[in-house]
Image (cartoon, rainbow, N blue to C red; front, side, top):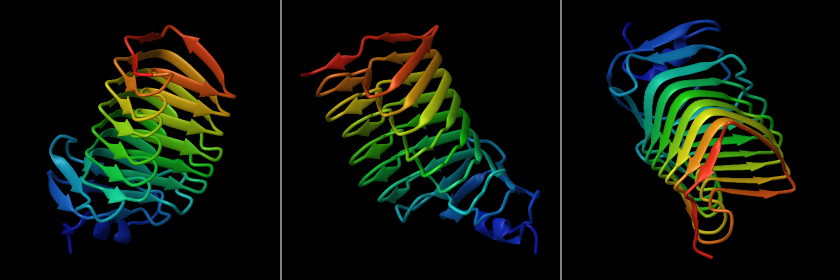
Length: 239
């Protein structure tokens, strides 16, 4: 029967190419696209909320979703080992658009978004705010040939051991028209920590981030960096 009571029910009933439209409201659930290349679109990201109830990643892409879309939600209250808000793994490339990803917690990596093993999401018009990772990447974590495209994103007030805003390892990441502000690292890099990676910054502001050790704004190890029309300023290292 329509409408479905849960978003997951709508996903389960959908076929490739379908769109699941979600009315404003708070949905206490953890959703999994389960390999379906569909669009799940909320009425408004301020009023259409997926609450993970501290019982895992709020949203999961882990079955070759290469043309899926998530648009128009607040993603919150996830709690897991990795990927508190959104978990992307193994040859997936969803589009993540018009989202608030906020107040998610992980014991390890990727408080807001976790990308692992050729996970290449398009992340655009997203606010990633107030997430916490026990290890790396409070806002976004990328590793093992994961190459996200990040555009018109605000990464703010996230906390991790390394890479309070963004942590990148063994990847190629393009970041444009983005603000990385007010993030904190208990070790290296309040803003961005990158190792063995290629990073392109185009019209990016990395400001007012803080770390206990060196590289409060940007900390690179064995990485190539291209910077165009960007500001890295007023970051504080307490070492």
